[in-house]
Image 1 (cartoon, rainbow, N blue to C red):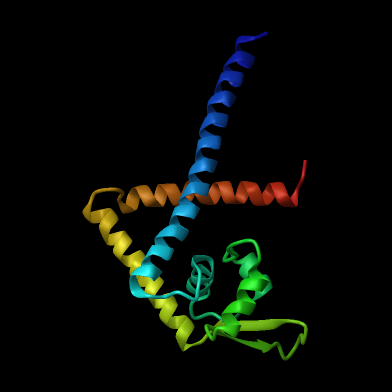
Image 2 (image 1 turned 180 degrees about the vertical axis):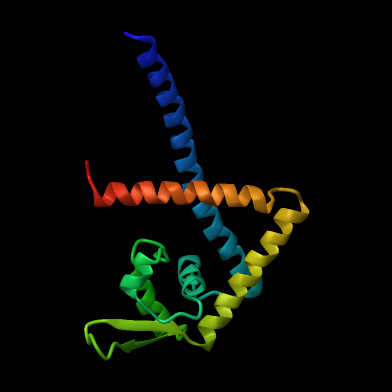
Length: 165
């Protein structure tokens, strides 16, 4: 066995350990985010909508989109976007309309009620950003580096899906 192979194996083990730790953190952070939103809803008395649905409303924002666009734009949250969209329409948080060109496609946008939830989540995230800075938890430079790294991982995973080796 050559020294080069031994060094590569040690490096691979280190990267694997870091990769698995990062995956666990991403998963935990997502669950914690949902809990933070749930706690905020309990604080302000919002009871009929869940955190996954709130994130869908937040991510749609002022856009008018189809369910397919939610997936391609990376707004897809949870295991069943169609179910959540249907529930949000039924509860009056979203408006839906058949596309004039492709009648099979349905476009959705927020109602005034949906925009209230989006604004509530926006205010929550703004408070978090201020708190992160004020308490020296993280700065914009570190967040930028972290976002760049996560985007590279996202591209790598997307490539793995598209081009299975």
